[in-house]
Image (cartoon, rainbow, N blue to C red; front, top):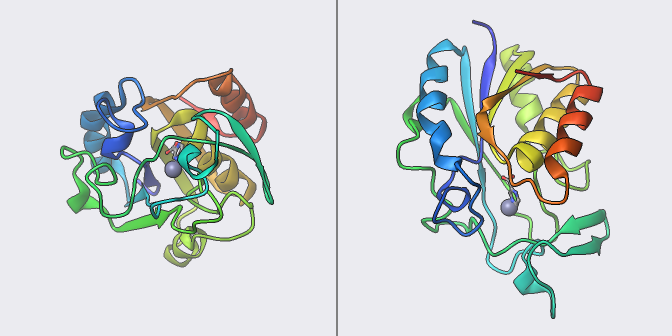
Length: 198
Ligand code: VGL
Ligand code: ZN
């Protein structure tokens, strides 16, 4: 029991009925609550966008969700408006036991840059501060769960592996958006970096 459980974006907008609903997103909540008992530290992330965020299709004339655009930091998928700061959609799923969280890290608050990863914004260089927090606490082993497998979980796991953490993604406690082969690509990318998928 030396690992941190990293609970990624288990928020209303990523659950059925939400603005960017992931199929079965709510099914993982009881299992995540149970997994908290095994963790030495519990960290939760919260996607936290200002209105008019640059990752929203509605911010780009003539664009629809799931189309791509080129941002200064590279290609970016456009999304429906979601996880707007302070909204009910941005709130954690009501059954998620957030009282157990040691730290909650918010990301995506910079209007000009999306932020899938718990460690870096999508420019791959602006840190969220999580690495410093984990280092200070002496934690080097991470189990990741949450939403969505192929975006925020994937980016977080890849960045963690690159930073030298021992990373496991508990696939039973994740759900994917899975469009255009994104889930298969994510699995391959994670495994190539030594992330354990279990
Ligand atoms: C996410 C798309 C946009 C995620 C967040 O949590 O996987 N996906 N914002
Ligand atoms: Zn987002």
